Length: 215
Image (cartoon, rainbow, N blue to C red; front, side, top):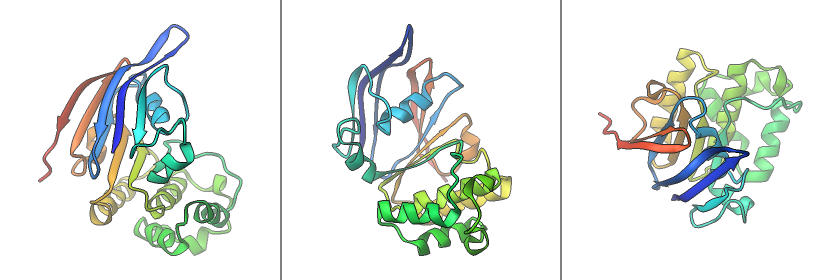
């Protein structure tokens, strides 16, 4: 479970998170939605332990990510919206993830196959030279292979074409029903059919929470 209790974060005179309270239960599929500047990305960074809030607490399975980030991140995988400009080859990036997380290459290859990317064909290429969609697929496969309880995606389909987007959502539906999944997006249509809870943010506040029953 992720528990967010009355967190506030201010940069200079701007309050970007304003007394945010949120609980994400194990197995939930949550969409955090809102326009640019709503506070979504700042909330994401707070969950990841990348910034310390001015007030309030965050725990991931009881672990505070700002006090024991390494332990907290054992429960959480993350795929960013903008892939970093890594100069590692694809196989080197996968090897690094395997060594640091205990995942295995066969799972990464299998998820890439599900996303219609041939690992053996792309393995020796520098990651930064891949197309945006290919980078996204590699990062998704690495995150899924980590076997974390919770997977967080920031604008998960931004770099994927419609077919790749559909394959990505089918993969989550088929193999990750028991996982907690958090999507950060502008649009609910991108993850329609998966999310069970929508959290709407505006100006640093949660202004609405609602559950969704999928058919």
